[in-house]
Length: 310
View 1: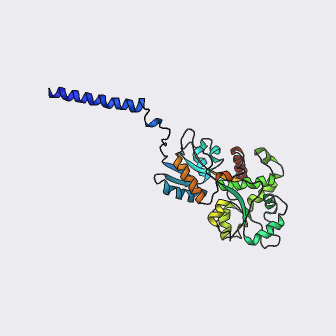
View 2: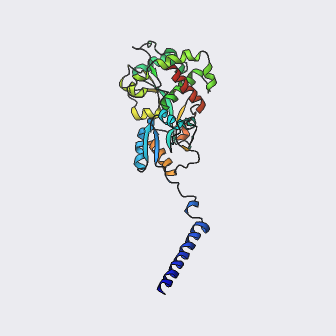
View 3: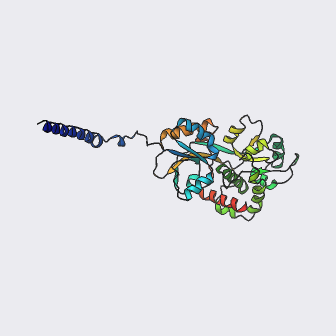
């Protein structure tokens, strides 16, 4: 008798639980159908080397996020080999260059610039008056400064490895071609004789500060014209006392994005935290950008050109 009653109780409990689950998951739709529910946050983030300080701040807001910092080349090589990268904080158009990641809307932007030591600015202004700045810099790369001691030593950085350096290289090439260009324009027969001295003026092994600006601020004799961005200037020389910034035409902007595999969701709070960390680090609101970098295919062609000349 007792066993029969226990069995009856168990069956009743099962019916109650089953009815609750049916109501919750079928009739009411369950939590999975909640339009406001956030996707599970990714457990790992790959961070562009140039954004390492941003990712340090982001890690404080997202303590469960495992953050790896590496160069654009390292991440692109891993993606090309078939490795998974769940989330990448990078700049456009690098997600499209990977062929496997989709970028978010831009989180922040930073205008590309050219920095010089204050004691070289007047000479550069005089020598390049009325000319495209980057085209002029390429024309005088390796020459004696007019009205200042030493040689003209420009650098965009290691464009084969660094995203920011490849961006500055794109800006320099646009200054020569004086137009929005694609891979076809790199076939101009006058282009290679112009770009080779620019690339070879400062060997990448001489960039003791890792970037042209960081090197220039400590060793102006090694780099006297540095491809950089407003964000890097804010990070390394916020008062602007050790460098002067110029903005070449056509204007180009870095645009920071979160990239993930197609179909993957990026939690809104992660995008919000990343955007806040970028703005705190000296980046601008994404709406201020006026001209993006060239397309993914053009950037790949530029990187190949760089590596062929190195």
